[in-house]
Amino acid sequence: MEWATAKNDDDGKLAVPDSWLFPHYYDALTVLFRVENALRLFVYVVLKEQHGPKWLDLEISSEEEKKTTIAALAKRTIEQGKTFGYLTYPIQSPLMHLTSGELVGLITHDSYWPSFKNYFLADRKVVTLKLQEIGTVRNSLAHFRPVSSSDVEVVKLNAKQMLSEVERTLTELI
Image 1 (cartoon, rainbow, N blue to C red):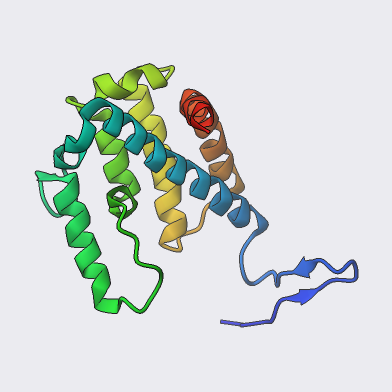
Image 2 (tube, one colour; image 1 turned 180 degrees about the horizontal axis):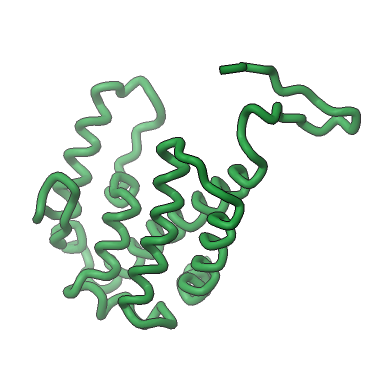
């Protein structure tokens, strides 16, 4: 693997070597960062409003466990992170410790969908599929599998279609 150094081009802009990442990967990272963090904030706002302080006790399924709670899942992840506690910043916010798949699972769960459905302009099955498509591209990129520029366009379109009301809701909070 060639580890060429990034340099400034003649215009003073950063010139990233072609062997690093395709330009559409930067676009994908930006869009996915915004989508996932908007979903985290949105889920927190809705669950806190609907369930008050008991939102942490809501049941959730994780990859490791069929049934657990948001609090228990976050606690386990926080404890795992302490193994290398000197890396990154300690974050106690429970939703920051859920995967994007777990967030989608919360939103579309039979018990919680009634709290979320008014924020989506589509049927639950469509919302689930569109968010799963975003998750598929996200996971490919996060696990260093190639993504195409059309994959990035799918993420942008799905986010625009599925999250317009979510974005409006979050904007009203500011």
